[in-house]
Length: 157
Image 1 (cartoon, rainbow, N blue to C red):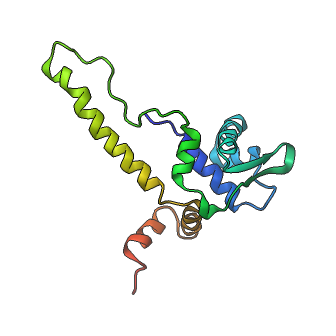
Image 2 (cartoon, helix red, strand yellow; image 1 turned 60 degrees about the horizontal axis):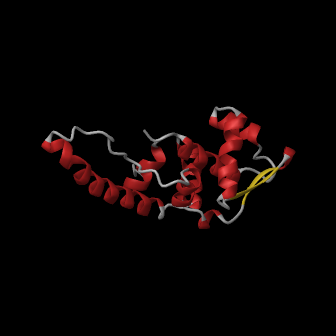
């Protein structure tokens, strides 16, 4: 199962990108994420190691280390998943006495790798700036409405 740290990392980055400089503190971000500030600091440290944010100790908060246009979701994914763990792991001990059990790892490994490559490719096309724009629409129109507007355009009377 994929942990939520990716979504939390994106949440943190959106707060850093949209907050007034100096306001994106771990306590403030933890309030928005609805988690403990320690969790935010741990993920923020991963984002900082990846060169996505700069963090100042104390009341200084965090800031983007590069422009929101230059940060993709693939960058964020790699920051919080630094070791190459498969997105969809294959169960490790199929029954080798079964013909299906012997064949399934090779069959699934290739297909899952293709799916993971497509996932990474898609993440590489989504920038933090685009998400920040979407966030503004979500907050203005309410949950889910901005996606409908993107897909179908505004309704006319």
